[in-house]
Length: 202
Image (spheres, rainbow, N blue to C red):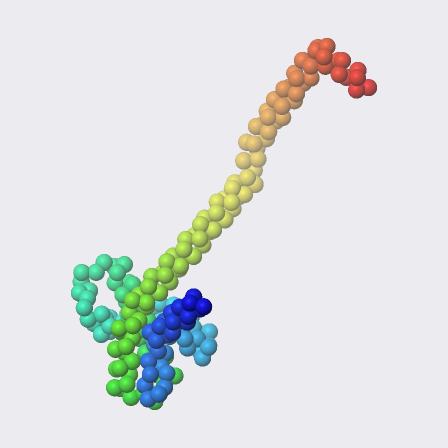
């Protein structure tokens, strides 16, 4: 009973961070809550970084991160922050598309709520997205290297010079195996126990 109540409270609290009420209308400030209302191309546009120009992102840095001195950030930190800025811009664009009735003051109110509620979650999502993309790229690179290695071996093995070099080695291995087998047979044939076992098996 208490667990169900706690779960409902958590869901309610989580949703409160994703919505804002303006003129009795619910505005989603979590862009993924609009997922059912846009097509796959828009979904890719939202999820993939680099869909907005560098100039537009740079001009909006201080708008969404006024507390930062960008000169003190590493290149990796700048990449993450820029992608977070891009998420803010995309979310605001989606809100203006699905809520065209909002005036500039109302949009500013939405933006303020986003800065308070979504900055950390947007940045976490960006980090996870980059980590996932890096993992996929690493797996693809390993797959490519593995295929390249196997292909190189196949090409090397079918070369005429390679086959000529391997033929004497194969012959030596075969002769050595035959000699070892023959030596084992001749040794056992001199063993009375070996002969007795042969007689019993007949």
